[in-house]
Image (cartoon, rainbow, N blue to C red; front, top):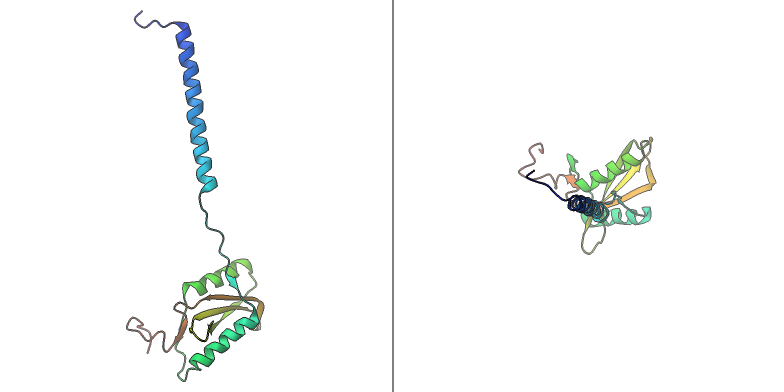
Length: 155
């Protein structure tokens, strides 16, 4: 026989293989556990609620600063922040028939625009238990916000 091995050496090699396999498996398992346990998962989206009295003050700030438009409203620009809040509300309350979006200014000095999203009921009253604040972003009426070269439907 060309390859005759001692039974003791074969037993030691088999034990070494078992121990090595166990250690490699344990290392891989611990590594996968660490990846899952310590990886950052984005928390579920929760929009920022706002008290109705504060939201009312913000909408008053807007009217005081900007005024009521003299021209007819042709369109309205929404930002993804407003869409995200509406989606959140629809996903969490299937009875909401619609929304009202108020233009608002958070601070009269800085003129920081915010959007106020309010769920409405079946007779189109504001649902004051579902009032949310969003960033102002691109939120606004047309004329003004839509009066751009790329606004091809604006007349």
